[in-house]
Length: 292
Image 1: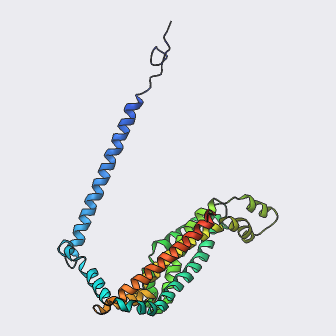
Image 2 (image 1 turned 30 degrees about the vertical axis):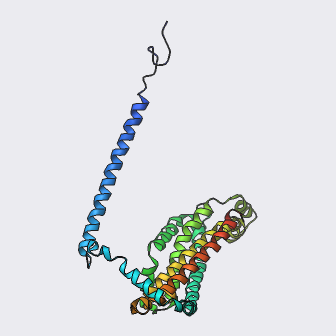
Image 3 (image 1 turned 90 degrees about the vertical axis):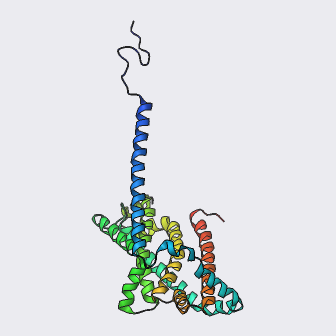
């Protein structure tokens, strides 16, 4: 009688050794990973050396001086620390302007992102064939940094908060549009189908069937983007877009004698970002999880 136990007899399947196959695959992946890591290390080293050669001064030669400027700023600010409370009040209007730029640009960008997201979401888009067009449009809007857009607009419109607002809103629309679209893809389509069966238009289906479902997550993403836009609006002040960033640029340009203003601006901006972060974090939790 033929032995049919596992691995014996003429009818036993001739399977390869699974353990050896697995170990060979692991070794192959490690080899490819090592080659890729080595390539990136060499590429990084070559780029670093090229950048250091083309720099105005050698990085390693000036490395020991990296803390000299911060120490000088802090030392002068500490000497004039009695002026800080008055300086806080002096820069409050610029801070309000920065927050206004961030708020308006977030609102405009979020409204544009809503339309782009709905037009780029499979199963919801008004023109399904144009979904790739709207997706690539959002990719392009995200790819262009705010500072590049602001520099172009400053050349056309002149300095002020308007170029910063348009630049941040443009980038925000692309960034939020992507996030909004991902949320909308998980929406339940049954309400949309029900509205379509009674003759509702596309806009009515979106307004009554989709937006109530996705609104909490959309608002959560918009609040997070508002935090980012406060920092972006402060940075754009360095290129002449107004706000507290412009005051910081002027204070640093004047050099010694204005460093107490630099510290005051840093502190008030840091406090504002922390407060906004804590408030928005609380409301994001309420919107997405319902926790207190």
